[in-house]
Amino acid sequence: MDGFHATTIFAIRHNGAAAMAGDGQVTFGNAVVMKHTAKKVRRLFHGKVLAGFAGSVADAFTLFEMFEGKLEQFNGNLPRAAVELAKEWRSNKVLRHLEAMLIVMDGQHLLLVSGTGEVIEPDDGMLAIGSGGHYALAAGRALKQYAGASMTAKEIAKAALEIAADICVYTNGHIIVEEL
Image (cartoon, rainbow, N blue to C red; front, side, top):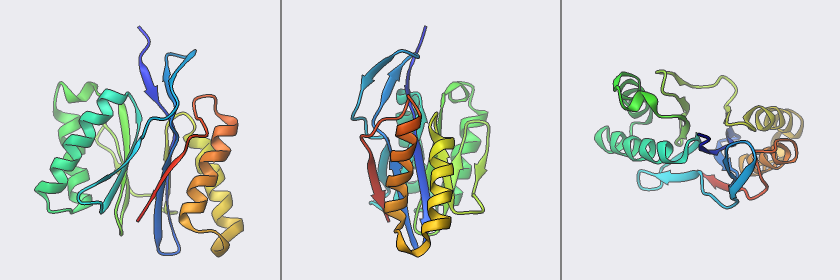
């Protein structure tokens, strides 16, 4: 049976600022858009951490709750909380079947967290996940390289999602951007 899926998240660190953008589309299977205004980017840990998800919505909410618990447990230490979440996610027989990915960021770190145990910090200060992630990442890299200091992190994140929405059928133009 087909499941519900949520798609594109893009995050960037640029000129001392950080921003994360997500679209609002939730797709059931490959043919039906069930929702246009989902909020896939959230503020956690007293507004100091941004987290975005791609994948199964219910699984992502479970991971958000677990991750926020890890942030509390490790007093907001993002890398430690991410590693501990990835370890638990990978080793727990029930959690191992969750189908989602997370991007998490604070004022200093930007990380991809997956259920296979990866915690990856990108070299170029940008990450994207979901079906439109490759489009958003390519757009973000081009915008950062060619617009440079003339665009803010928030502007690049929004524009990258807008470009992805024009290309990817699983990404829509209802974009939420959060910035630190």
